[in-house]
Image (tube, rainbow, N blue to C red; front, side):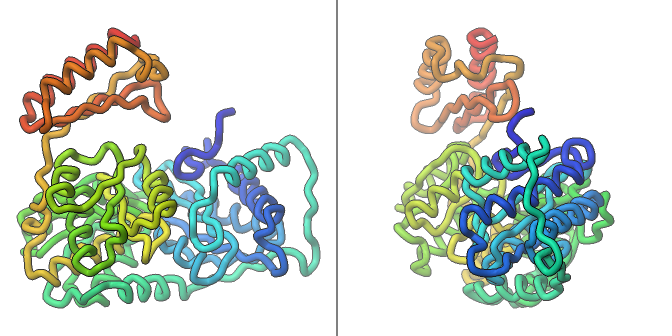
Length: 452
């Protein structure tokens, strides 16, 4: 059996890979590991448990709650709320542990479990490893001490979580959204109630899409991975902008009034300039991954803002931000982290701050996003190759050097082995799309030849 924890918790097909038994066992193991680490010392432990609307979340939530309570942890069930809401409530309620059941932008049959430490921060890798080891030990028959009587955990439905979280979002905005019309696509997911309510409380006129979850329709042709409906609705309603979330609402993409997509790089550009103007962009730095569009890097250079780039994955962005005290970071996919107000990517907060910038400046989102020009970016996946030899192959080193010479200062090449599949990703950017496609094709052929 491979490692259970990936870069974003434990995920798989619900009731096939991610079973009730696994959810219960991991929850018991998490309680034991945190107890051994001293997290619960001197008080009765408390956990916050939330989920997205997937049908499988109902039985998985029951399993998680049962596991935690059987291990002596009191549980606050907050129901269907975004991942960043569970992180926020874990911190604001002083809980020792947070658990979110969601598979984010994945299709409905999938689900996942993500644990948060005290304060609403992601668990350290070392703790995840210990949880997995403890789970495997229990599964192989190693006994564990089970509390009885008053020692078992109590379970409470915490209905105030929705209002507490929405109040937090609205309370941290720099200005209101009065006069704006915003279309919100909730992906029939965890933001279906939260995001429209937050925008309305902030003063916006709200039009909704994807806000009728039935447990089966999450991410189905809607949300941040399917923007066609949002584009059409923004134009149809004459809205100022549209925002789209994924299933657990930790990301946000946007659409301007003409129906043009505004991706995570452009959102970061807009927010970086606004935060610098407000004196909130600590160390005059924004953090992004190596997959960010070259146009974003060039825009930050032109605007005099420092850019730090990390490996792909919002966890690496967050680690860099926390290590060096940066305030803003994110990914092209729309994971944007505003560390002064959230401990993880927060799609609703991102959308609110983007709209607040439109309201404050009186400029359209298209004008604001125009601070950066997205250069054509071509991504080719090359399957069935030895991804471990990408960095050591002299043939690929030569092919990349030739491509970089051809592209010059307005182009970029990135060869990256997939972290989960036997393939290599070839990414090429250039000022001209035809050139980007041609160079990407040649590099893909070189990868096949060198590593196939």
